[in-house]
Length: 109
Image 1 (cartoon, one colour):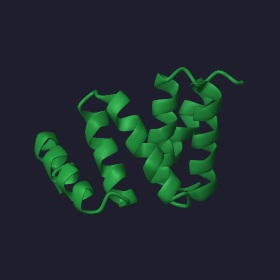
Image 2 (spheres, rainbow, N blue to C red):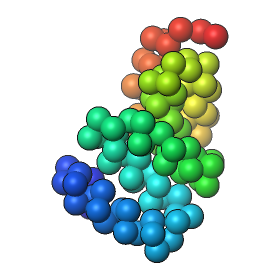
Image 3 (cartoon, one colour):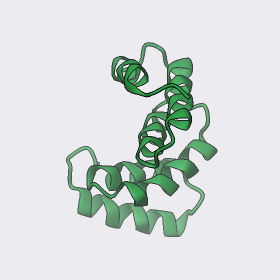
């Protein structure tokens, strides 16, 4: 709820507490990654989105955030893989048009 209302400091506090109680909660890691990304703290977002993708490989949206993090880490081939995985999982999804644009802008391996 805090992420949806852009109350990111409150989201961070609540999500960190939740992950203390249940450290393997993939959805919690994804939400925390989104919080950190929104706060411009992508380095902190990256390990959480990796955990989210690892725990929920068939959920499309975390792949986009992981792709974005990989671009920040100067790993365009990895980012392309994640964007393509998103499109494989949810080709008509809300983020699909933007993901297709990112694929076009990302240099090939």
